[in-house]
Amino acid sequence: EYPLAIQLGGSDPEGLAACAVIAEEAGYDEVNLNVGCPSERVQSGKFGACLMAEPELVAEGISRMSQSVNIPVTVKTRIGIDDQDSYKELASFIKCVKEAGCNTFIIHARKAWLNGLSPKENREVPPLQYETVYQLKNEFPELDFIINGGFTTHDSIMEQYAHVDGVMIGRAAYQNPYLLAEIEQSLFGNEASQPTRYEILENFMDYVQQNLDQGVYLGHMSRHILGLFLNQPGARAYRRYISENAYREGAGVEVIRAAMEKTL
Image (cartoon, rainbow, N blue to C red; front, side, top):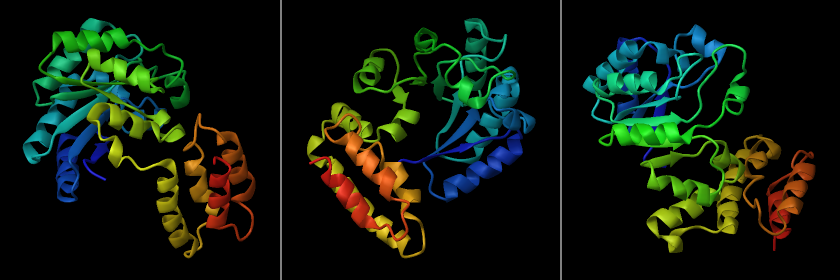
């Protein structure tokens, strides 16, 4: 499933460089540095969003990784932290890291509160500020900016291409996985190559059977396909059937097949 990126968390430039080399040797196409996670556990390890307060350290890490590998080194970050949330401070951070060799920034268009909010709350409570990301693109047109935060529909995603270079989809990709197929068709026009939801399930059932044979419970796998028919006829019956039957003793691929028939 390529191109494939790996995200690293850390602040030691030499350690990051060593990990980047391992990632490149393992076949990854991109190394991304986490400068966006606000959790206290992450802060205690001195990585994530707290590094927005230390742009020179981030730049040093980017520089060492860029010198060590031939694949792109990118940054995922927020638009600010705590009271360090002015556009001037954000632009200064971007400029510093850019000069170290980073050409692509994935921006979660929310600030992060390092104290007082849980990671979940930090994904929802701080208001989205898309205009801030647009402003960055205008100021640094030579850089690629990928916007992230709150995108759940095809139209809202496609609208972003008038302002930025790309969109990162997080929770929506899990809750409505077929959204990715719809977006790919709009961007690249290869509708004929898109598998149907039913073809996806047929392939998935082969994977399920292999794991059932190794003692894995069906429910541990089937819960990840509950959103496949989101907003389609029979979606509720499909989800209910899987939820009610997947954890029963001896449950197998017949549960998925029966659930699939609820949508026909």
